[in-house]
Amino acid sequence: MKLRSYRFQTILAVALFGLVTTTSAGLARDLKMSLFVKDSHFLATKVFVPMAKNIEAFSNGELKVEVFASGVLGKTADQLQIVENGIADMALIVPNYTRGRFPFFEAASLPFAFTSAVHGCKVFDQLREKYLNESFDTVKPLVVCVSALSGLLTKTKQISSLDQLNGMTLRGSGNDQTKIMAEFGANTVNMPITDVYVAMERGTIDGVIMPIGSASGYKLEEIAKYYTLINFASTPLSFIMSETVWASLTPAQQEAVSKAARIAQEAMGVAYDESEEDGLKVFAAAGGKTNDLPEAEVAKLKSSAAPFWDEFEANLAKQKDADTAKAFMADFRKLIEESAAK
Image 1 (cartoon, rainbow, N blue to C red):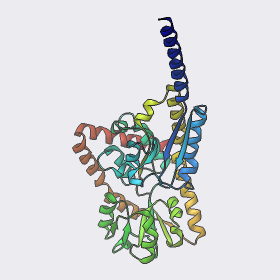
Image 2 (cartoon, rainbow, N blue to C red):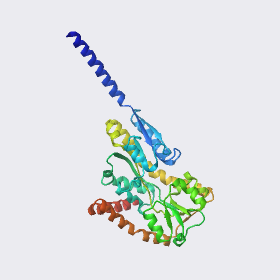
Image 3 (cartoon, one colour):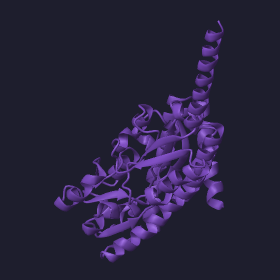
C-alpha cells in the first residue's frame, strides 16, 4: 500500500509538474497573419507589419506573429474563409467580397460619403459597437476602416466633362459605380486589378476607377496618362482575428492585441491618405497629368448619385428592418458631418 501510495504521489507530482510547465509554455503562441497585399505595400509596411511587431512587444514576447503577404495563404476574396478555417489566425479582409454578410459595411461604397480615408475610418470606428460588430460571429474585428477615395485613371482622354464618358469602357467595382457611369454612357466592367495593365494596354478598357495611391503598385503610371480627381467612393476593410484564437488568449494577451490594433486603426487611414500624395508624385514623375472635375460636373455626378443613398437604405431595411436601417443611416450621416468638422 505504501509503495502504491508512494508511486501514486510520485506520478501525481510529475503530472502536476507537467501541467504547470505545459500551461506556462502554452502562454507562448505563434500566430499567422495573412495579407493579400504585397510585403512592400504601404498597408504592410506602415500598418500591419508594425502591428505584428507591437503584438509581440506588448505581450512581452509571448505572442509571435508571422506575416504572410501577397496572398500566399489565399486569394483576396478568400481571406475571411482562411481565418474561419484556421489556415490563418488573423487577416485583412474586404467585407464587400462577401455580399449580404456585412450589410452595414457596404455603406462605405456610397458615392461621396467621405472626404478622405481618415474621415471614413473615424466614421466606421464609431459605428462598430452599435452596428458593425454584430455581423462578426466567427471572427473578431480588430480594425475597421475604409480605403482612399477613388478617382478616374484613363489612358488617352483627360476627363473634364461627364459627356466625355460616353462610349468609354471602365474597370470599376460594380454596383453603384456601374449604374452611375451608365447614366453618362460609360460601360463599367469587373476584372481583377492585376489584369488592368494589360487590358488598358490592349485597349480592352479605357480607364479604371481607383485610388491613385494604389496605381503604382500595378505600374499603371506606365500606361495611363490622365487622372481625374473625383472622390467617388471608398472600399471598406476590416482586420480580423479568429474568435476561437481570441478566446484562447489570456486576458493580458488580449489586451496586447487590442492595444496593437488601436494603433493600427489610427494608422490605416493616415497611410491611405499619404499613399494618395505619394501616388500623385509617382504619376507626375511618369508624365501623367492630373485634373479636378469642374464643380458643375461634380454637382451633376452628385445629383446622379443621390438616389443610391435611398436605395441603400431600402435594401438594408430588407436585410434588417426599416427601423434599424433608418437609425443606421441617421447615425451614418451624423457621424460623417461631425467627423468632417474635426
